[in-house]
Amino acid sequence: MFKKILIANRGEIALRVIRAAREMGIVSVAVHSTADSDAMHVRMADESVCIGPPSSQQSYLSIPSIIAACEITGAEAIHPGYGFLSENAGFVQIIEDHGLTFIGPTAAHIRIMGDKITAKDTMKELGVPCVPGSDGGVPTVEDAKRIGEEIGYPVIIKATAGGGGKGMKVAQTAADMERAFMTARAEGKSNFGNDEVYIEKYLTTPRHIEIQVFGDGKGRAVHLGERDCSLQRRHQKVFEEAPGPSITESERARIGKVCADAMANINYIGAGTIEFLYENGEFYFIEMNTRLQVEHPVTEGIFGVDLVREQIRVASGMDMSFTQENLKINGHAIEVRINAEKLPNFSPCPGKITQYHAPGGLGVRMDSALYDGYSIPPYYDSLIGKLIVHGRDRPEALARLKRALGELIVDGVDTTIPLFHALLEEKDVLTGDYNIHWLEHWLETNLGDA
Image (tube, rainbow, N blue to C red; front, side, top):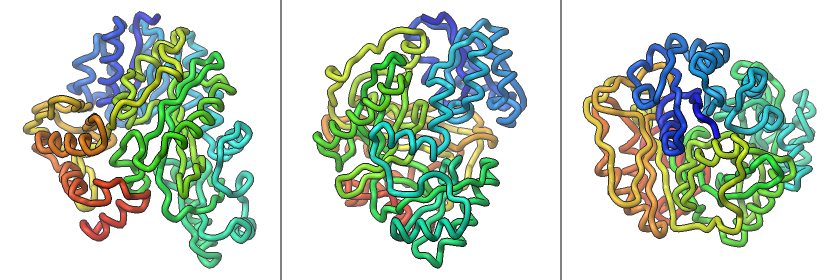
C-alpha cells in the first residue's frame, strides 16, 4: 500500500480523496494555485505545494509542476480526481516514466476511450450495443448527407474529441445537414484542436443511463448498477439518481453483465463509467469516462462501498474488496449539483461566502469545500457542492432531499439551490417520468432559459 499520495485536483473532489486516504492511513499531498491558497483541500491535506498562478494552464494542468511536487514531497502515486488531467493519456505516461503510479486506468485505455470513434469501434467488438451511425469519421458534407439518408433523420453530428456538449449538432432533415456538419467541425477545431466528426442516429426521447464499472487490471471486473442522469442542461448533468427509476432488474443485470465482461476482457483497472442513451428498452453506447464521476456518491450510497478507497487499493496492486455476488442494491440515492450560478441564465457567480450551513441527519451527505468567509475564485468550474441523500426507496429519498435543501444555507453568492426547490414540485420529477430533453423544455417555459 502507498504511504503518500498526491491529489492533482482541487475543491470537493480533492477533499473526497484526502478523506479516503486519511482513513487508510495514507499521507495526502494537496497541490494548489495561488488563488487556492486558502482553499479547504489545502487546509485539510497533510502537506501542500503551490504549483502556479490562478490560471489552470499554469497550475492544475501543468504536468511538470505536478511531477515536481511529487518529487519534492516523496509522493508515490497521483490521484487525478475528475476533470483537469484525469483523462490525459500523456500525463499517465509521464507519471509512469517517472516511476510513479497513476491511480486510475492505463494510458492505453484512456487513449482508446478518449477518441469517440475508436471507443465506439472497441465497444462494438466487445459486444456493447451502440447507436446506429457512421463507421468512423465523416470527411465531407456529401458523405454526411448519404449517411443521414441511410440511417434516417434526425441525426446528430459529434466531434470525435468532443465533450461537455461542445461539437454536437442535430440535423432534423437533410436541409439542416450542411449547417450542422460545418458547425460541429468548427466547434471541434476551436475547442479540441480536432475537426473530425462522426454521425449517429438522434434518439428523440431517450434517457441518459450510465453503468458504473470497476476492474482490478487482472481480468476481473464488476458493475455497480446504473445511474440515471437524464436531467441535464446543455448536456451538463444537474440531478442524478440510482438506481434508475425506469430500469428493471432484468435490464440492469443484462446490460451490467455486458459492461463488466467488456472491462474484464480488456483488463481494465479502476473506476469507469459506460454511458448509454436508453429508449424503448434498448441501450445505445455513447461514450466511456475513464475516471471517477462527479455523481459517484449515489452509487456509493446504494451499495455501501467507497469507490475512492477501492481505486487506491487496486492501483497499489491489491485485489478488489468485493465481488459481483456481494454487490446488492440497498434503497435509493439522489445527488443534486450546487453551482455558484445566477438564475435564470446560469452565469457564473464567484464571490465571498458570508454564511454556509450544511444539512445533516440520517441519509444526508454534503460534499463541498465551502466554509464561512471562503471566496470562490472566478477561474474554475462553478460547482461548489453536491448534496446527496439516501433513502429506503425513491419517495423517501425525494422527501429527504426536499428537507435537506431546506436546511442548506449558502449566502453571499447566487446558487442553483432555488432550481432544485422548484423541480421537486414538478410531477414528472416526482414520478421519474423525464428524458434528456425534459429539463431544457422546463427551463424554457419556467425560467426563459433555452
